[in-house]
Image (cartoon, rainbow, N blue to C red; front, side, top):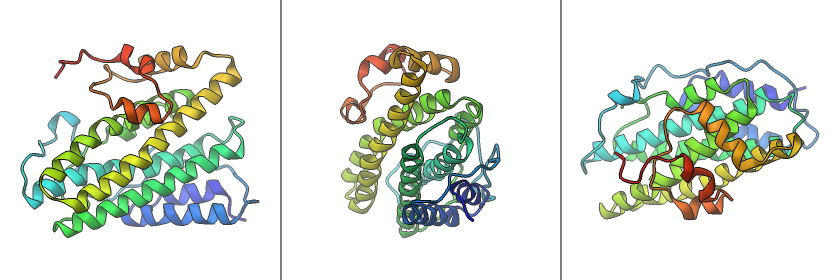
Length: 268
């Protein structure tokens, strides 16, 4: 009988990006339709399957995405699309990797929901990038998000602290400026997609926050101090302002958590 971990492993070992996104949505529907499906147990890969393109560059070598042309707009959306592809794998890796941590079924419900929505985001961006004349893989990308996941593969508290609560929270900070940029260009189609993503990513940060606090409660830890400890030990550098405090607060993530770990406001 197929288990949730089996579904997760299928997604993680699927290289084609659009198929990975489609399977993510399909697996979520299967899970919801089968309330007695077992969680199961598998050995997830340390690195998920990936398509041959895009070319992966170090973050410092990524070209700047400036301009107003269709190509420039597609390149910016492609960067978000690449993040969403990684986010699909991150959600399903969370499902498959941490089955011995004593989480209730609600934990898996939440991360299946995240995987479903990340798949939706990828497909929305795929369609918009295609309307601009390009496709996933046409622009270079970097692998920073998965590198953070790999480095926290043996520590669920560190994974939750760094991936949803630092890296995905960063998306809440930068997406409003992208929405404004596309809005100033009259690109309402791209604005609509980015607004969907921003709204649902608040929920993803909240999910990470909720389960981090669950761990703290089980272990008798104070969440803010432990989160800051996990970030200092597992994230290189300082958090970069400005912060979207409204969106972060909607995810129950107050400034006294992250501002002490941030760079000065005028930092480049």
